[in-house]
Length: 167
Image (tube, rainbow, N blue to C red):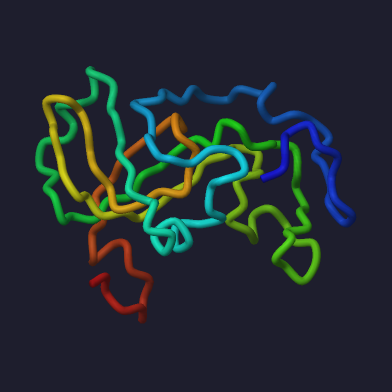
């Protein structure tokens, strides 16, 4: 991942402002992701994290949010929304290394975006509600990445029309 101070690559375009300087609403970090990943070692996506065999991770919730785990169970799939706090936020057109040319930020899953919100569909491997720890099968985020929300995966809602249900 590029450092937020790196100059844009050929074909990339910056916004005319820094989105971090504009606050329209507040976001509360409810916990942190724990993983073995850091800058330079993290996989590009969740598929690579799972394939590496080193992707096992956990979510550590802050104490006030632990009661929100009631009803979750090991084996269940959840959505984790997290804030890619080390990402640049000023690119509106990007030139991904793996792509065929520049594309708009909203056509990519890149962490570089005006609001660096990422999401991952993961499976709960173990759960300790009292400690606020959720073991998950994998994550592609750096250790310490802030978590902003957790939602259950619901087959009837989270599958686009015509797609196969989750295993």
